[in-house]
Length: 220
Image 1 (cartoon, rainbow, N blue to C red):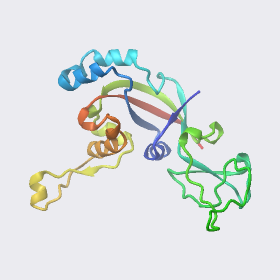
Image 2 (spheres, rainbow, N blue to C red; image 1 turned 90 degrees about the vertical axis):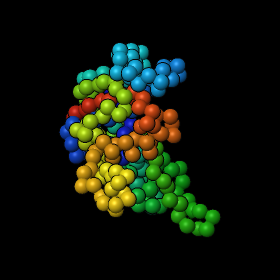
Image 3 (cartoon, one colour; image 1 turned 60 degrees about the horizontal axis):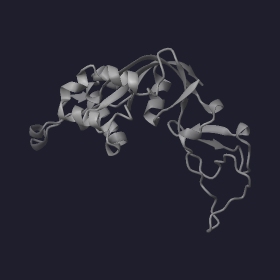
């Protein structure tokens, strides 16, 4: 069974809902194709998406595949001594509070101290290193498609687990009025840019993304 790395907000979404959506940039697209898409937006909605679906490796696998979820984590010893991981409590950054110096994972010695004598605080561990047995969520791929990131709908953004954000026009801003309307799509735009804009996959570039719909088949 393959694994999938989720951001904290995606983990919380999977813990609350039975059907979720996840989007990731389509990587390894030839640079010439990216330039063509930026120059000719209509190319984004052509058979090019079918080509991307066929030629680029989808990180989600295929419909029907099951994926175990990796997330940011730490193993916490029940006391201040080193314990092997199977004797520790697993905590998760998406839902738990880090306890500080009690955190211990695969330590070979105990009594670790900083130069000032204070107990070392172990940080959250990368989701990449989460052991299979510590995974608490399993997903099943229901649907996969390739589309420009801006094609996301309100319902899609809601299934991404995004909080809605208020829209405000320039006129409303200068008149100091706040629009009563909020949209999940606007919330998704800001989250997407915070994750991918600096990597060259910003919202304004409107490049293709893998858009996956998943069933949550297991929660621990």
